Amino acid sequence: MTPRYQRVLLKISGEALLGEQPFGIDPKVLNRLATELSEVAKAGVQLAVVVGGGNIFRGKQAKDLNIDQATGDYMGMLATLMNALALQVALEKQDVEVRVMSGLNIRAIAEPYIRRRAVRHLEKGRIVIFAAGTGNPYFTTDTAAALRAAEIGAEIILKATKVDGVYEKDPVKFKDAKRYERLSYIEILQKQLKVMDATAVSLCMDNHLPIIVFNIMTPGNIKKVIWGEPVGTMVC
Image (cartoon, one colour):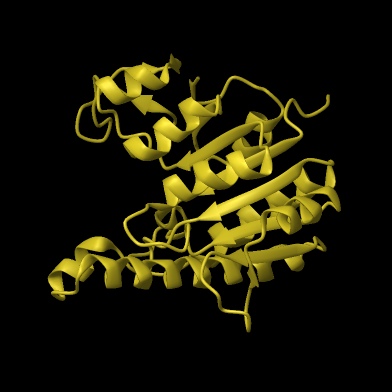
């Protein structure tokens, strides 16, 4: 069985790295993700990753600290860099070549983001981790994922969450919540479903980039999605 997609962008939320912890990175979760991602990369799939920073710093904290949004967003970007470096180390222990590329210029720990260089890394079989969002405040990591996916010519965005797809309402609060198997971009925007922010969804729609929303906490799901098995919710 061969992979259905040859070049993908995986968006991992910072909260996914929490595991059962209230803050930071759960080593078990990090190592499991590294094992699964390395398996995918070794199968020949060109893999780019955008990682969030919500496990370390969130916008609500900036408001509580009376920090303006721009500064708070930059702090969040630095949190994504911390997660990216942790994932890089975990992946390298799996004998995979990894490059962290940052939207912010921090040359001591990451390469600056250059589109052609990122594509070249992917072609050489390296996993590329995009950190620090777009490098600009007021843009979410979801928007950064959509932008980077379009720039590198990814076939699909894999939106990794803690739930097994997109629901009509919060499945944690409402046990009767219905899960969608397939949605259009317009339905996402009209129903205001919390898949990605409107800017990210619009960017995917304009560039005909499909999105699969799936549960990353279930072991093996990353490979299943990339191999084309029916997992999660497809947005196209």
